[in-house]
Length: 420
Image (cartoon, rainbow, N blue to C red):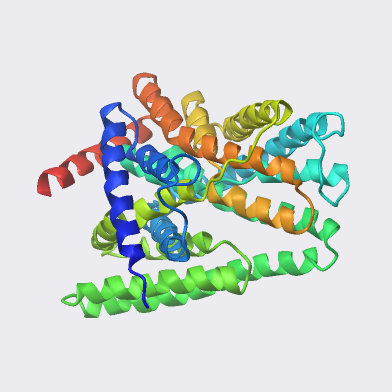
């Protein structure tokens, strides 16, 4: 007999994410914080009213794909090109510093007299792997927050997006290297070749699709709804092929798909359509599902102390690492803080990395709980910190382009609210 439990699950998620979203806005915090808290409260970590299901996991995955596709559509390619080299420097610093910080943190605690690890690999590899986990960045949380604040199309917003994409690639490389040492069946050369192959494929496929799509749009202006379908098909195909054939995160493929279409004439029309479905269903499920997936195990005093230190290290290493990279590239102090804070959230990306390490014996069971808590805390505080650093930046002196762009976005949001 077919179960209709998923209908009740969706109703509960949509109701609670909206209620808590309204509540968080009342205390001047982004709505995404309310959605994350809703998942935590409903899930096994707090009240245990709901649990993560395959259906919710699938809808959540589709939600983050649409979210990143929309981010690609909203990205200013000219501005992204300007920040390309800076994004690379920011991403590299945002990987090196967390690896070092995570390693030192694990090196101090991962000892038999403090925390006994049951991982099968050497302690050195385990400690390095903790650092690799800290390199992860879940840009989806930051994207939603920046959109809500009207700050996605800014110098710092574009730098965060570019750095996050490069960060994902560097994270894959770091993960592959450490797992290849622990698991001989993983070959680093093949993984690197696939990554290069993906970008070659993305350039070729993107160029061909852009030419065909732009010609079709000019000859079929009265059938705008078909443009949306064609764009969504391209987004899904890019997400699928990037993950399936090249081992690159599906959200990277979705973001590049949005980036390719962002130069067309119907970008605003497409954004309006995708924002509706994202706001109505996909985004609430995605953010709530992060909370639903969290289970907090029993903790000893030493593990609690390690957790606190790990959270502090996770936050500071991204802010310092990415902020330092931004400073090296000439960004102003306020922009450096924004970029650093924007890269703090670890989200589902760190959990995926951790699961890979568990599978090959790089992460002991005693360290799983601290990693999960670190993910939860960094995911929740990132929107809050972003609100703080952007609010302070509105008062302090920043470059005119960033402020003007932000004000235009705010005015656009106000117009949309009045129209609705």
